[in-house]
Length: 209
Image (cartoon, rainbow, N blue to C red; front, side, top):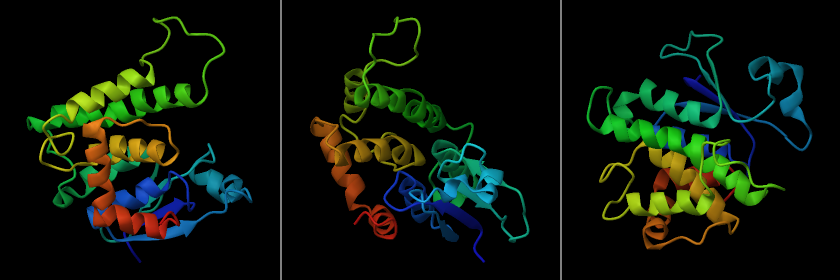
């Protein structure tokens, strides 16, 4: 039995958690759900995540004897695994200089970029008051990421990190559906993400390659 059990569905954004586990070199098992059949709304699954959403990760502990350790929400799963497996090198250690930028990008993905993407995909009937929301329109988000990647391979510079899974995974998802017109830095970034063996393995296992 592997340490982690990932509840996921093929060809969904839960494949991002597969990518994370592959990058971390983690031992994991998969529990595939049929979202078209509504199995994510079964009583057993709702006991894990009352929202009935994927992905969900269970941590059985280093010795396999933990029970009830459940992590919901994709960004929380990324942050949890990166800290739980420091030997994977996916997160700068707390108290180091790179941790500041890392924490920013880990939060920017779900807290700013994703809401802006949702507004782009499903425009509001009426513009929100500027003081009512905490994120800019998506073009401004894209411009900020484009500028941050100037002269660097990854968001933290030469080092790939879990922040690239959170932010880069979102950009790759959007690009798949034609929601991006990437500038040169983001285009290079997306190509580097696509070339990563762990990403390729996750896409194969997730039915997206």
